[in-house]
Length: 131
Image 1 (cartoon, rainbow, N blue to C red):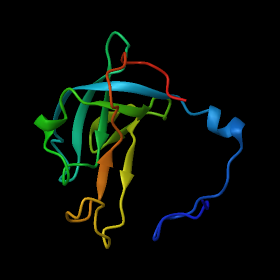
Image 2 (image 1 turned 120 degrees about the horizontal axis):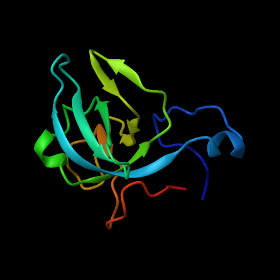
Image 3 (image 1 turned 30 degrees about the vertical axis):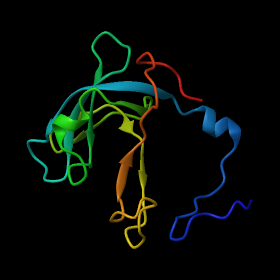
Image 4 (image 1 turned 180 degrees about the horizontal axis):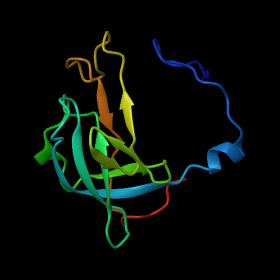
């Protein structure tokens, strides 16, 4: 087994374990998803992150997901990403996703995927830490 990246993958600089531990990765459940009112490629998503109010994120996944199919999915988020306003809407974190090389065929023989959300294979309490 080698540590070679997949064909077409961008290799980023190595980081220390201490740098990695600065990321606050958490489980969140998608409560609501809708089209972003001011952007063609974004969805506005409300997450149950275990906090009382939850949080909102904007995600550039409109081309791959319909808003209604996301509701109820559990995803992994970067919870301590500095909030920012994206096209007039507050985004308080980032949902993690895999990006596939669009020139390759998917493992199941279907058309190549481009963006796939990282989801859980069984239910976990929202707000649970990912390590």
